[in-house]
Image (tube, rainbow, N blue to C red; front, side):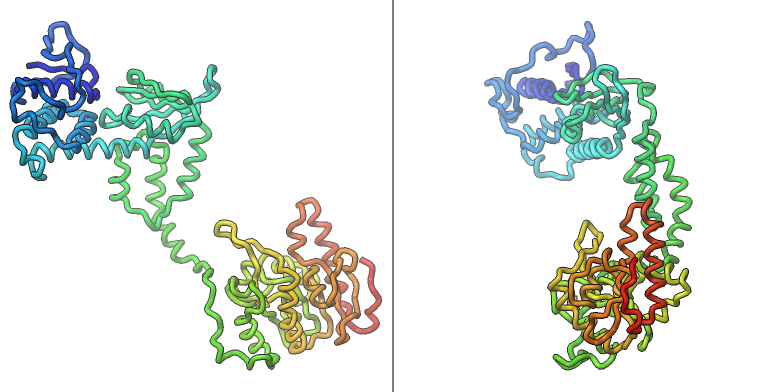
Length: 497
Ligand code: SF4
């Protein structure tokens, strides 16, 4: 008997035919299966009269052999749905043979090593893999369309007949855009509302590359990790037969060739600083509770373990000042930044580099001054993996003030330079309008130390490009004045900016 499926992936038609054959007691080796359009002379036995029932396990007609009354497991129906998508012509005969045997050999469903069952499962696996590869390797190209404005078109060459089965996935994933996937045997299109299918396309219909493709290639190049290159695994996951439709495939060989050198340069590069928060200092190393630190080392240890405000628990470490004891000037900033927090040193980030530059231009050696911050721990908020500086609240700055006081009394500078409003407030004990009071020596401290107020270098970094050069020159002039004024009483006259 010759049975034909007009549509080779029409599972319902196969089920109807198979059910009728089974009910009629036609053994598998008496059936010849074929697929494709009907021919006049084919003389199909069941082609024109499918049964009405839609499941193998429905009640058979009275004439049906009793063996065929056994329902087949639900897993077999699912297996049929996969295997029918396989390209091998013998799959229909295999499925009917399995159906016949399930009806006549009840033990078959419990035999995982049966050759027919294993072959069907291998076919289903191949279909699943092909579906997965299509989802992974379809690359859309944007195409201008006179009627609808814009469409995204992809060319793909599946191994099996998976286009219809896979189309709902793409419709869900790309519901908002109009797209078409062209394949040699079947094409699918989504207009934003519904899927439609048509006959296969020619490879020449594949659209030319667009700007998005260049973007994708740049992205691929950047995410390529030479240290994790495993060519054998890559070929297994991304078989070479797909490469001619993947724009990134052209990059694989040059990237693989350069992988060794790039890996070595990654090994040679200095280690990325740790971002782990260090454990608090052991208590026995801390100075006695309430006692003012007697040395700068004691002060560093105590500030590191300080939890006088919430900032301390979030930072990597306290960042106390650095410079010679007895330095003539102590320059005080706001708080450590991201890089200072990791390095444990003040003024090593971008703002510190700007300060270094200005001091070098003034011939003012960095190691001749003591550099410190008003707040000892880094306050930030997380944005993704980035730690963004956050100004300390007034109560936090006040909680930290005693550390700066201790630092001043241990270093014994002759003059203080406040860089920014937080430092100025910490040193003068009152709110300071930096722009109004900058460039002047102020004598308000109980200990008699003069305070010079100017901007923090980070304020310059935040300025628009067009304003930065002029602001920098003015700030450098402030620093020159701060350096030359010795902090003597005669310098108490405020200097206009
Ligand atoms: Fe202590 Fe100052 Fe750190 Fe707050 S910021 S925990 S007060 S050292």
